[in-house]
Amino acid sequence: MPRHLLGGWTTASPDPGSTIQMEAKVRVSEVMTRDVRLASPDDTIQDAARIMAEIDAGCLPVSDGDRLVGMITDRDIAVRAVAEGHGPDCRVGDVMTREIRYCFEDEDTDEIAQNMADQQIRRLPVLNREKRLVGILSLGDIAFTDGKDPAGEALTGISRPGGLHSQTGGDGAARF
Image (cartoon, rainbow, N blue to C red; front, side, top):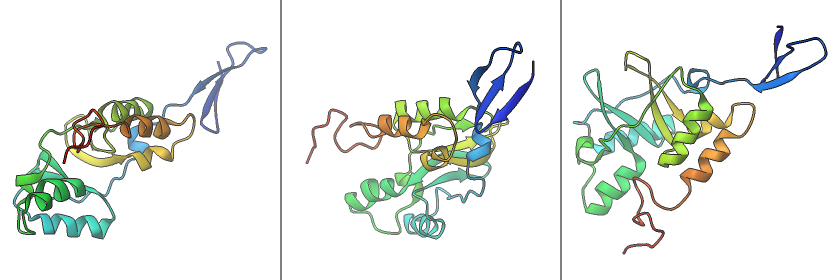
């Protein structure tokens, strides 16, 4: 059965008179950002913010040696540090997100986009099957894939009220 890749679609012809179309799978490794900067739990939030500004990113993986121990986001710095009265010398380890959600480099972006929507996550560390960090996957990375609109689907789920860093407690009612 001949197979041809045409603009993001695989066309299979099981017999000469018919055509079946299936969407081509895009793997995380094809769209992720490979050049990843890391923070240490002992770095200051000012150091982390400076790196984020240099690389134009809103998050950094946090590693202790060769172990991924958390993520620090610009939102963590704003909400868990600055809003709580901590200064620029506050340690990353004191305000980082310790619960690490990640994906594997060989996974399908459509499935990962759905998981990002379900869990309201905009960026994920990407690991290989030996659980070593190999990249970062963002909603923006997924937006550049062909086929249906996994980024749009993910953004719809991510943008609903609530979530891990919500200021509303998940029910849409602001708490002041």
